[in-house]
Amino acid sequence: MKTYTGATLLRTLLERQGIHTIAGIPGGAILPFYDALHGSRIRHVLARHEQGAGFIAQGMARVTGHAAVCVATSGPGATNLLTAIADARLDSVPLVAITGQVPQPLIGTDAFQEVDTYGLTLPITKHNFLVRSAAELLEVVPLAFQLAESGRPGPVLIDVPKDVLNARIDVAGLPERGHRTSVAWCPDEPIEQLATLLVGCERPVLYLGGGVIGAGAAELARTLAQRLNAPVVATLMALGAMEHDDPLFMGMLGMHGGKGTNLLLQEADLVLAVGARFDDRATGKVAEFCPRAMIAHIDIDRAEIGKIKTTALGLQGDAADILRRLVAQLPDAPARPAWRRRAMDLKVKHPLHCPAPAHHPLHPLNVIRELGRQLPEDAIVTTDVGQHQMWVAQAYPFRQPRTLLTSGGLGTMGFGLPAAIGAALAAPDRRVVCVSGDGSILMNVQELATLAELQLPVAIVLFNNSNLGLVRQQQELFYGGRYEASRFAHAPDFAAVARAFGLRGVRLDREGDPLAQLAAALAERGPCLIDVPIDDQANVYPMVPPGAANLQTITAPELELATAHE
Ligand SMILES: Cc1ncc(C[n+]2csc(CCOP(=O)(O)OP(=O)(O)O)c2C)c(N)n1
Image 1: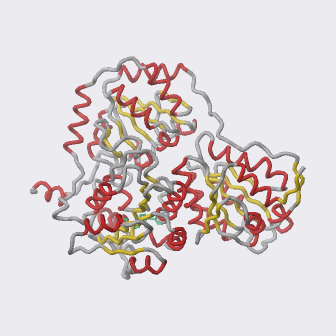
Image 2: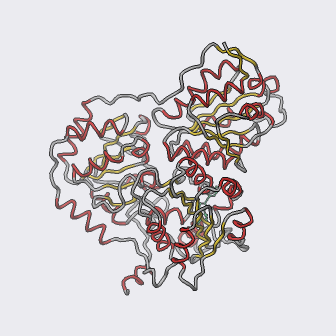
Image 3: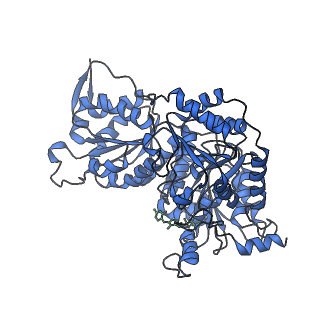
């Protein structure tokens, strides 16, 4: 029998869970837990805003695939965490958020820093707990990790009132750590049916979503594509599952996907979606998505199957398990030379238009490609949200799963910097680059202080266009050029801002050789911010207008002309 307080028990259970780094900010209600952390082997990373802490934890979780922990106090600490929790929910990221709560006798009295964290997080977590006694922690903590990681991963919240943290409890034995449990096992029959469909069809396409990476099934998906001679398209969340230059890879589909990629889906007769959820950014107008195709769908979440698009065959289960069994029983598939040629033709006919680096070195796509040349294959790239995010998705040469960390579902500006800090904490030997915009970086700019303190090898490459670029682009294309609230009248000196926080700050010079300057800035170790002045009128093309069918692509007329004459 050993005596704990709720707080020391919580710390001990996290230690037993194998948690070595957590991110958070202390405050009154959670202070007993911070006191218990004193002298613990758990490293606490002090973020400068709770949303930053949430995204630091997400960065760790997205790189490792294991649940990571963020901590906040009650009231504003908890409400500041909400965005990071909702973001984890939409992108299926395993996260355990721990919040302090006012003492139980004060709950419901509008006490200082009281907010109904349980109620607020109900719709944005996979599960949430309001802990009523120290003894409950013995069950709740391992269960939270089990729930966050099992099946379709997601965020779990544990709200702990201060009196629970302070309560004393005698514990006879500690529980087992919580771990991933196996999900529903897919029977053989639908796998056999799928194999028959795949062999019998003429124009198959594999449509990969983030679930492929989540399930560790990227290599199996590649093997399946090769066995079937089937071209592969990917969502934003699945980039890295296939090598970008694999001959079967057609790149990203959807709103900013390749025109050839979207056209290919129009012609497919069978589309096998794996760990994808038919998000509107991928499908465009659903009624016109893959109009000639029968849809088969493998997903860990039964609720996703048939949710958006009628499915001929749905298989619920772990994508790695299903793909392994599918590949094992596939007879030799037809070579499909005509279909492969068609895919290749579409790819060649609709390349990403980009002026030559010598003429326009600071064209965003040239900067991204230079980044790809400078960084090692296993470098981790985080992004914020906007045009720069889409340029990364279109042009960065991803080769490995979990090398792109981006806010796909919620599309949260402010994600990139703290996620990069989390990535660098989880993978200290790897290079981490955060590609951001001059709008997004300011949404969590305070985390530059965290980065300077930790001295992690994170480079922030800031695409500076003096605009909320993606908003400006939509106003140009769809709102008659009425630019309302998308232009920044005042621009901070971002390199100086970085220096003020204690990082290296560099601004590329348009007149010199900016790509060489970029390479030189990246070559130095340690954290830095590289301010890249880009054309404030540059748009992301191709673009499918919101709500339109993926066929209705807008391409870049001026760039097409420019490249045609080169
Ligand atoms: C928190 C949040 N607020 C608003 C938006 C809407 N939004 C999407 S993109 C964008 C502009 C982003 O600007 P910037 O970070 O400079 O990137 P750029 O598009 O210029 O590359 C905005 C405001 C959002 N995605 N997230």
